[in-house]
Image 1 (spheres, one colour):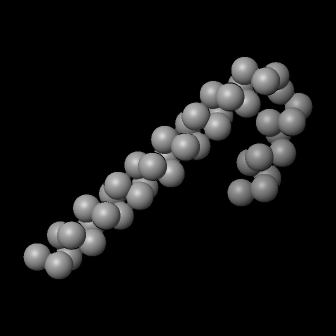
Image 2: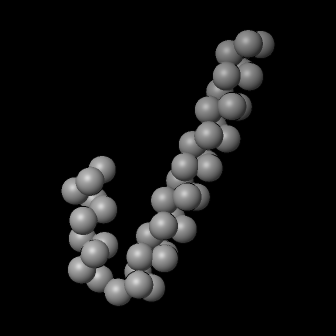
Length: 43
């Protein structure tokens, strides 16, 4: 994970913002999928 984050330092702020947005979408999506997956397992 650290290896992916390092290049952000070398690029502009705009790319960093887009990257953070993309990361947060991935995290939120992962949490949603996890919740749905757990609910399906209970059934």
